Image 1 (cartoon, rainbow over the protein chains, first blue to last red):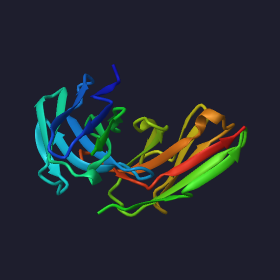
Image 2: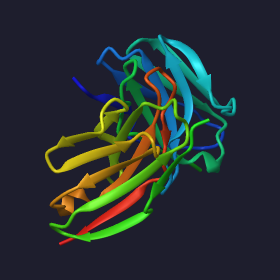
Image 3: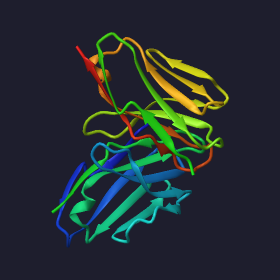
Image 4: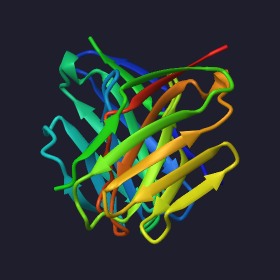
Length: 111
Length: 112
């Protein structure tokens, strides 16, 4: 299994809503990442988890809250988002020294 | 920190021709250089990578070259096909868990 699975594929939420993005991998990778990607731009790193511990937070606003319940799962909790947060949210995982494998992303629209 | 420059930003080639995308990096500590292909509406897909102890790597129609001295690496696609049309990203990193730094991407169009 070389897949990173993200759900949902699409999400529309209001600015007062609370929602969660989910990511799962079964490759035994111990590093997992959240990226944000705007149209025609490269992925922009948000968070890194290494061995289920948050190791990097790229100064992301607190309305984004990551969680790593176990070595296979990664969540991103969303609350009080702004329209400018609309983007493709990508999850990725990697083994030590290896390339990152990306999921298909969640297309988020904030209305 | 690392900075990755990628050129060109757009590239159009005739089907069957070759395509070359070039990247430069700034941090001599970087030793891992993957390339990603991203199709519309999908996540980036790792297509090939190279480490700093290797100068060239091939996988069918795709090859990557690395010049450590000049700090640049390139993606070569031969006999291009319409399904090669996508955005390609280069990236650089070290062998630890330091996250990759991405180039800004190249939109490749293969014209049938």
